[in-house]
Length: 405
Image 1 (tube, one colour):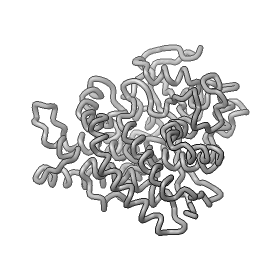
Image 2: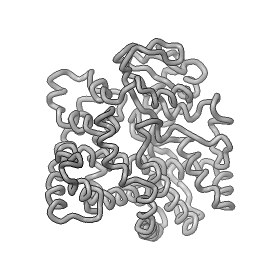
Image 3: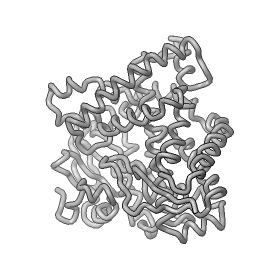
Image 4: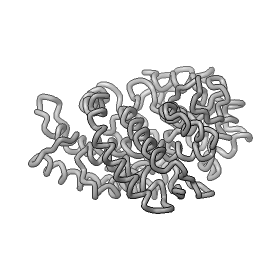
């Protein structure tokens, strides 16, 4: 059971700063059953790493478990978003997971990502040049959201002018899939977004079928039926997942890195004096303040985790954000150290659900940070209070006001 020490868990203060709560978990409750959300909360790095790779814990029942508190009539009312999410790769197990993952793997190989680098550098140069025309600006809306949104639209074949729609659809789906317990209002908003996104995407698929381009959707639409052709409904769900994964997490990575450097000026000076430490800074940001705070699984069989008996059907939340601050795994876990020797983290997951877009997220972040170190070395965060979404799984600054000089 949740003890008094951890009473702030899932409170408004928790979403502002979950790390004090995570520290308390490590001290007294590395695994416990939370009656309010009917799930196990697991925080130790070793158990999170093992759990995310454990084939006795499935991903395919997660949406059913996440929506179990809704009434039968509500689940029928929100059947579109439930169907959409159930078609996401991340919510499927083999063989369906294997089939879908195979279809998109080739678009995110290191060679494919490296081939996108020249276009990415042009996009970054344009965005940074435009932003730096302003003395002060919101870093999120101008850079940390806009860059990954444009990139995923370019990769998928979605017109850039739809990037705000893509963000809205993604945020509404996050309101369902990334909440501790989705509310009726959030479920309704997500369902409406799913209907709207699917309507647009079906028309886009028709257009790309007639006039294909060099993009992921055109390639998927052009597959011969013998190659495991996707239905429009499956492809729409896959597309929504790809643009969710393609910018939601990268937006958080970039924003959280900027904040970590701002709050640790000695590390910023170290990075400015030695740019070879940039990749280490990115990995440390992924550990120190992950944009994905947890991944979930459902027990397929009775099993034991950290001495607790987990029953078949139990919902388990593996707390990535807490695991990344585990004092049994890291030296000075609450310190941001860009030349940390004990690098490593769970932020991209483990096992068959390891984030397919991890190389792209790293490349986007490195390219943007390199440009900012060159062109805006004195940029400062001037916003005192940072607001975060009240989502169990996603952490990113919603606004980040900065001054260039």
